[in-house]
Length: 342
Image (cartoon, rainbow, N blue to C red; front, side, top):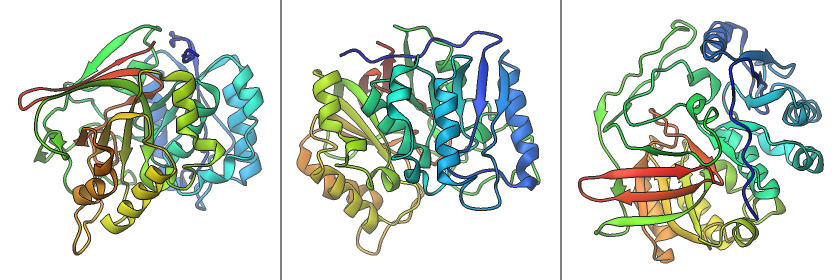
């Protein structure tokens, strides 16, 4: 069965903002305004939904968040939906979303990462509709380093498009910008040098498959459930196999190791031809580093494992399309991921 891709966005199209997980505090609304203006500068109309309250850990009761997200994903006037950021407990939406209605509607781009993986990945797995694991709205104003794209670039690409991304060679190793005092910041501080690293051994990597994955801390809770049946998705949509990507937000290496073991036992990596691992600032543990945690859990797969990819919580951001065909190339002198919307 082919993957279904949303139509490319054109000037005048509508982009909706909602918070399926955490909302936006009043003292962060200035940054939200800057982010909305960044999307509008591309020629799009932006509408902000009802579920945006930032006073608690979620923006509204689960039923209200699920209803709004379903409404936006099935509204033919809305061409893309993007959250301000992730959060903690988007998992409570999964049994409340109207999956049949979403599946029957014309595909709409759903964008985000972190806790949004809890929605993005099941949406692709359950409906065969591509979703976009990329920087959230509040990070969208940042200028994109050479070699990478913004989610705004990807949603405007027509079906069948291919695009390559390469690591810029620098990342943010320390600190973060307080949007309360600097709501209009657009320059990423990339204060450390580093590129992709092969964890499982040496030698060149040149492997292809369909992309699927997301945040370890959120997906480990749904792996093996009907919302994250990766083996069924592979049978239906990926006879060529998968490129699975994972990234750690903040849990220590022991926890990440346990979570990845559980995901492997649940079949999350059964059809993987390779695994991409996002760069992380999550802490090592006393006797286990983050890299060692990945190898302990995923080394038995016997497939290439390429780490320090820009697909996680450490800026900059390399957007990935769940469901896209991808080719991963990693040699001592060249690192590249090519995605095709086919």
